[in-house]
Structures are given as structure tokens and as C-alpha cells.
Amino acid sequence: MRPSWFLVGMIQLIKPLPHPLDDLHTWQPGDRLTHLDGRPIEDILDLYYYTPESRRTRLLLARSNGTQVELVIDPADIGAVTECFAPLEFKTCACDCVFCFVDQNPAGMRDQIYVKDEDYRFSFLYGNYITLTSLGKRGLQRIIEQGMSPLYVSVHATDIDVRTRMLGIKRKIDVLAILAQLRSAGIEVHAQVVLCPGWNDGPILEKTFRDLLALASGSPDDQSPFAPVNDRGQDYRQETEFSPGSGEGGVRSLAVVPVGLSAHREGLTELAPVTPEIAAEVIGETERWQAEAAAAIGHRFIYLSDEFFLMTGKPFPAPANYDGFWQVDSAIGLTPRLRDRWDEDLEWATQEGALPRRPLTVLTGELAAQAWRREFLPVLRRRACPPVEVIGVPNTFYGNTVTVAGLLGGGDLRRALLALPPEPARTVALSPRVFNSEGLTLDDMTLEGIADGQPHEVLIGQEDEFIAFWQGLG
Image 1 (cartoon, rainbow, N blue to C red):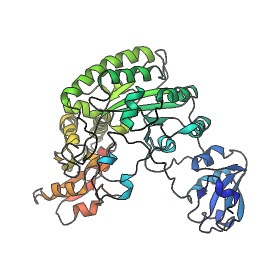
Image 2 (cartoon, one colour; image 1 turned 30 degrees about the vertical axis):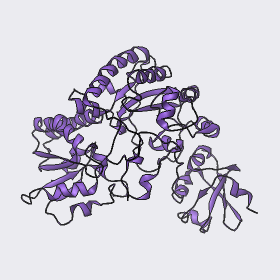
Image 3 (cartoon, one colour; image 1 turned 135 degrees about the vertical axis):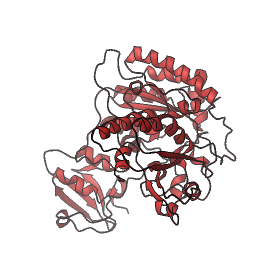
Image 4 (cartoon, rainbow, N blue to C red; image 1 turned 60 degrees about the vertical axis):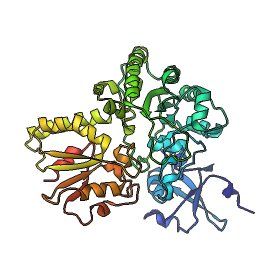
């Protein structure tokens, strides 16, 4: 018979506690944390949330042989304990979305790339988008109890029939009802629409905007400053104390991004791309809706990804029109934000006599190359920077319809690098979005593998800190 602790949530310890905590417990493989002060623990969020701030904490550990060990530690030591935990495993997605990019990956990639996540904890920790279809009463209750705010939600359409078809699910789930519950509980939500022409554009998109605006946070009289953009990074939050969200709940922003279509769609639902003509129409609609939202709640609420403006040649909105840049990680205002950040950094560099001195060659996606030529290079020239050569790299790994930098394969980058003239030797900067946290591209190449055997210096560039990166090259 399994011991009773086997039935509760647990956190696996994968290495000994750091000194001097290792004097309290001798680690053995299979050790798991099961309770905090008698309360069952499911994961690291429970640990942070329930740890008292002003008294010692009792941790109960279970071993694979059925024995239990109790540790009494100071709350300040919780951070050291978490360093010994196994990574948080995410819950997988049960949807079969018609536009899912995971289904459009080529064969032969590493297993992790084919996994679809649907985990409200990762939405809270890292800004991953979730559909709320697998949330359940227990998950919703936990979000509310622990104040997991903000969350990032893939809405796509508020029309129940349209959303059900797009998500490829059988049970009809009213996302508006769930969002209303989160709003009442003070949970802030940032919503997203992947725009699929013929599916959720036109009147369906307008309905989605109006339905979500009715659940929006904010008011026209609200003079409080907007929250800054989050820098979520690749690891767990580093605070020693868990700080659940508080304040006004509701939908804070709605991002619209065009559907991404790769060359690997055999057997999948036929979808049409967002063309420049469609993009221009959506820009016009969105400008009207933004004016309506600003009058109603004090900010523009709905925002378009940079692709809409780059593919149409239309000017970007003023940076102030992105309000809090809440979804900049999804390229919602990333281009104008970087442009103005770099311009400001160069102004300081000019005053200090510290402008960059080395010419650069930038290899990036074809869409990002447009942003460089249209928005970034004029700033660099105006500030009298050294010349920057920008090369848009065609994507043969996913197909020429995929133009974003983050989906470039290492093989395509290497081919572009080898196509450069051997002389003069260049300093070549690659987008940091090409590599994951382990330094691998989507086709499992490293920076060293891409640069091997050719004469140019190849570096991973920066985004926000690009000017400082450039200055540091000497």
C-alpha cells in the first residue's frame, strides 16, 4: 500500500541542501517535499504563498522508502531550499487549434519543441498564453486564492461557436464567464487574438473587442501610472517572498497578431495568411476602436503587433499609444520601443564621447531586417554611428512565409554567414531570439557551430541593451 503522502502534491529534491542547511537533512534520491506547516504542497508557488514571514517554518519531506523527515527553517532560507527543487513541469494542452504553430514544425526536431503547454502557473510566472480550457474549478480557485495576476489568455474569439471551432475542442467553454470571475477576484488579464482571415476577423474581431472591453480594467478618470512592462526571463522569479497580485482586476489589454503559417502544413486545416491589404484594414479598424476605448477606460486597450505596420509600410503609432507596453514580448510595439531606447542611449553616448566605433553586420529575419532599415538605421545614421550592414536571412527551415527572427534555424544563418565575402573580416551580430536558454537554435545548432571555420567574428547581439553591447566591442 502506498503511503498517504504519495497522494498529495509534491516537490522533488534533486540535490542536497546548501550549507549550512545540509546539517539539517542528509539528501537521498527520491526525497520530496510534501507539506508546509501541515498543509499539502503542490509546487513552488504554494511554497512561496504559504510560507509565513515572521516565524519558523516546518517542512515535511518524504522518502521513497516511506519514511518522513521534518525540517524547521527560517523563512529567509526558503530561497536556498528552492535551488534544490526539480524544474516545475507544465501541464499540456488538450486543444487542437487550427492555427497552432507546434503542429507546423518540421519533423526531426528535439522532443520538447512538439510539446504544447496549457498551464496557468507558467502564464503567471513567464507570460505564457493559455486558453483556460483545462483550468477546471480547482485551478480557478487556486488562481483566485493566491492572487496569480497578471495572466495571459489566448482568447482568439469571444463568439463561443467560433472559438470552439478554432480551438478544435468538443465542449463549449464560455471564456467570458471565466474572465468575469477573474475580474471580480481582482485578477488582471492580458488577452491575445491570433488573427485568421475568414475565421475571427471582421465582425467577429469587433465582437471580441467589445466583449473584452466590457470586462476591461481602468476608467477615464484614472490618473494612476501604468504598470511597466515585465521582464520575465527564463527562470523562476528570484524574490525571497511570494508577492501575489493585488488591485483592480479585469482585461487590461488585447493584442492582435497575424497567424503564422509555415511550409509544413500537410494534413492541417487550410488557412489564409494576413495580407498587406487585410493588415491595412485591421489597422484602420483598430484606430477607431482605440479612440473608443480611450474615452471609456482611459487607455487604448487593443494593440497590433509590429508585423501589421511593417507589412503595410504604415507608420508605427507613437510610443505613448502603446500605454504600458504590456505585451511587448509578443512584438506589440517592440520596434518603436527599441528605436526610441537606442536613440536615447546614443544621445547620452554622444554627450559622453562614447559612441560605438566598430562597423557591424547584422544577420536577422526578413521582417526584422525591414524594421532595421525603416526604423533603426535612420537613428544610427543621425547619431553618426559607424555603418551597419543589415542582411535579411530567408527561412528555408520553416518556409519563406515565416520571416520573424526568432524562428530562424542555425543552418540558414550559417549559409548566410558563409555567403559573406571573406574579406574584410566582419563583426557579425545575430538576434538573441534565435537561441534558447541553453544556447541552441531550433535546429539544435550552437553559436560555435554556426560560426565554425569562417573568418568573421560572430556574436549574439542584444535588444534593449544593444548600444551598450555595441560600445563594448571597442
